[in-house]
Length: 394
Ligand code: ADP
Image (cartoon, rainbow, N blue to C red; front, side, top):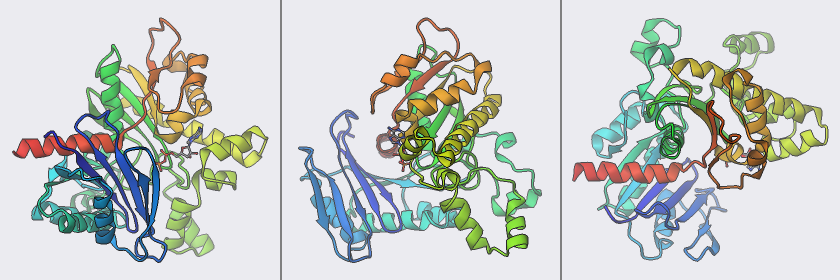
């Protein structure tokens, strides 16, 4: 399929889009419609000459925003639409061509992602209206982790909670972990062996990948499990909910809000959820920021060490996401916390890594496991999976 794919990531009041050519290196038309449904809704983006635009779309809904996006595609007609869908439950192990049965299957997993799946479905309905003739493909954040064995995905809870209610670990950020681990398998002489990946953005997760398959990951039933994130707590004692309810009288909604929106880097630093600002404040000696940085890095290292149990051999570690790609401080600290793994980080290469660059950060001729930075490309991966799915059906 030698035509571009339109990648859509639909939230409850936003649509992120990218028009991606069959040549992944070709420039992309990309943008974001936000605050949909409100008076200050707008569409922001870049055209093919790199010029930025900001178009007001007062009170626009998803369908109106998609029509405005269509006008921004500069006459290039996509051959298919790829939708990022957060939760595919156990039903989707790979991308799926959207038809009525796929829509109902996504609906049936909405209980597992009540904020995301309904918004993704609204995006599908709107694109079907605006592009009725185009094939549409669902690409799931959870699908890459469907290769987890039960030892990694089962919680130690009564069986019926799994069998009747689907309570298990699913994992997220699958397109990112798949993209960077397969990229490392191509770039490294070690190929597709055992890789630990750390996706560190606003949301953060780790993954153990063996032979291009996810074997364990830090996120679970929801994206709250695991690492410290921008505003999410990551792992806490499961007894915390009952404690906060009984001792402080907090409601479930309050607890959920605190753990998802007021914790993580923001909660620990008391300042910000943004790692750049945390690093700056830590540099100036701010105690909360120093603590946030230390806990953040320690928890990544602890998670990677734990996930290494899922790999027969360790070939290397890959950092990605806004923090993983851009923070030499975080990379250095995480590596320093894993001395028994035999990494040998080249400090100069670590510091010299330029934004958007990919590369290996080891000292020369080092024979232990490698350290890589690989910028993630979730949209490129969604476009590739969309293309493959459409071609497989042709
Ligand atoms: P999202 O998960 O929303 O896609 P990103 O992957 O863009 O987010 O990551 C955002 C995070 O990356 C923020 O915490 C931001 O501070 C951090 N970040 C971006 N650039 C740098 C940098 N140069 N140094 C440290 N952190 C950075």
